[in-house]
Image (cartoon, rainbow, N blue to C red; front, side):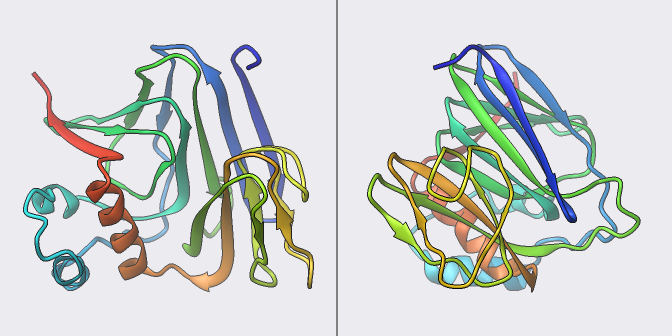
Length: 217
């Protein structure tokens, strides 16, 4: 892997910030503005409880702090820690985990391992309006092919048939995405953000232990 470097890109209303090959202890911060704060409610959490009735350790009280984020943060490699001022807990994100939510306050992300990478994609924070769109995070193996939704924006985390890592590409009719090595694809659609879908995705990551919560000492 190359030494630590950052990839950036911008297309239409989206921007990318992709930190690659970070050493243990590398830090970046998140305090992006939101036009509206739509919090997770009992309605969405009830969907997760019905879907995963036997999972008792899901930190439901912690999830109530989350609201829909206009950006998507994917931890592609390494292990990362997320800390937000005023909260006594921290989150630990393992490779291929991601989050479409955030909490109020300045959040610090710290690489806990060497060769850690994380990509942040979403609405340009300098725009006059900051809508919250539906986005999907797909994970592919070498040889996989995907047909994206028309009019969506595609951001691969690794070089693939449609472009370089961290680049933003507009989906084209009948043009598929082919991967030659394992990686992820962030797909921003023109549809409104789907809260229930994102809560279920987040719950699946908890179930697989790719996201964990701890009390700070």
